[in-house]
Image 1 (tube, helix red, strand yellow):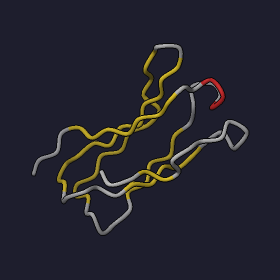
Image 2 (cartoon, rainbow, N blue to C red):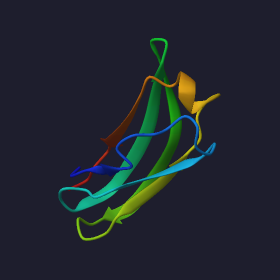
Image 3 (cartoon, helix red, strand yellow):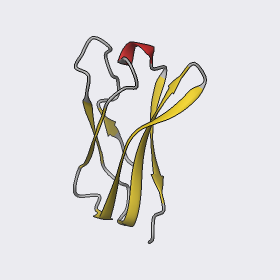
Image 4 (cartoon, rainbow, N blue to C red):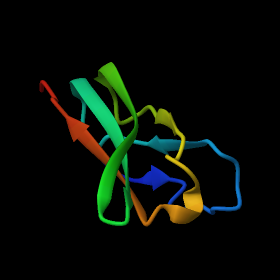
Length: 84
């Protein structure tokens, strides 16, 4: 993954945030997962499976916090099950 936008989430913003990112290479059947860390626990906020993800296209996933963005210590985007 090349980068994720926004790189920082402000707790005073809206309840939902859309993260956009570019894969670094062509990925088939990949599942993009957004997780949040809060007080040592990891919670899956959202996920999206794409048939094909291309570096030329931005991938977008909307996420909502478990309670409030103020309580979230960190957000991670990871990729599962890429069939290259």
